[in-house]
Image (cartoon, rainbow, N blue to C red; front, side, top):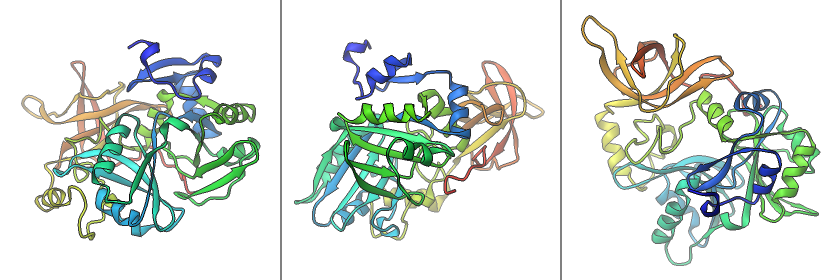
Length: 366
């Protein structure tokens, strides 16, 4: 796909000016890296980095009964959080497959908003609109928004230096008014495992905020570092680790399901999977031998005979913080943490230990 038919965020000229390596990501022209994946990864783990995540899809849902509507559509229980708080949740189909994983932000009585993944945003909006009762309005805000994620131990100070001073608890959000940039939604959330914030700003003002953060010394980071950071935390990537074929029970995301709710999309199917017990579960594998695993590689047990295939990697790569190869894999449910397995990396069996992520210990609540 050529650049002239790819969608572009409101920050594309900033990326070009910084010499970013650009790539097609789900139909969007996005920065893969600027100074290099490891340097950008390290900046986030040690100081602060910023990501253009404007390809993701912010959606405002409002109208009488909006919270009840959220509870019918999403797995988690919005009653577990209060106004201004956010929660991780899932939109499933009736078979229990995951249409998307997303954050739900609780607003006033008749309002909530979500951030859906880039490739699934249009589908999520379509499903919400098709199921919304009379009086519920589903507003796709992606065309008029820029979203910048500022992540790392110095993220709060970096935002303040750029003109946004906030005090937020983890997984909470607020709306502020900036004298120049107008209304902003600021949330203490992220996809890196570090202390971090995500700012939704009007598309016309996004470049000014990006430039202000760059002037405050925040390192621009691309999708490459975003992936290595989330992989070290064991955060699932939709389309790889979770999907219409990999349900929340298999992915060990039962904590994001309000099992006691009267109903939600896919509840009956997921309850059946839970009762029967899944045949496969999503686990982490930390390599003992040298090597870099990727997705769709066989996970095997070595024994007296031929290696036995017990699963498949769903994500994989090098973990810069821990200095070894790591992977997420859907493996047979009887393969427990501490088990030694091998990953078939292009015909070479690479030994690793099964673990429950994260691979790196951080504290985004600090």
